[in-house]
Image (tube, rainbow, N blue to C red; front, side):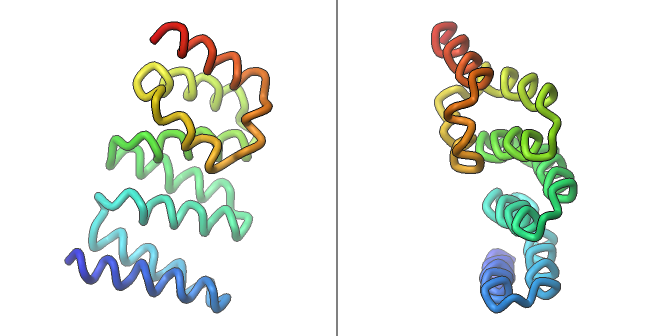
Length: 133
């Protein structure tokens, strides 16, 4: 199953590069069916949806991923997409909760949304949790 999942993930990336977007999405979803515990595939599908300007769907995918797995990268990416979708208060509340559990991995947030490095509310939360830890 793992090899088949890797095959479909690679197929999805190749299809995306060739602008075969429907095929790429189908391959990402097939890869997740084969191995729903693969964090990277969830993240790739969410990123693909963001690239296609399908922010709400990316948010749904990350919410589903966070139900299936407990991974800091999934949690921080969810916060970034909440910010992108205009749900700032929810994003900040969620960020505070995640920082309490996984402060050390907070750089994942900036991988998804580098501009948050200059966001005063985000920086304030980081300072609060850094001093609490």
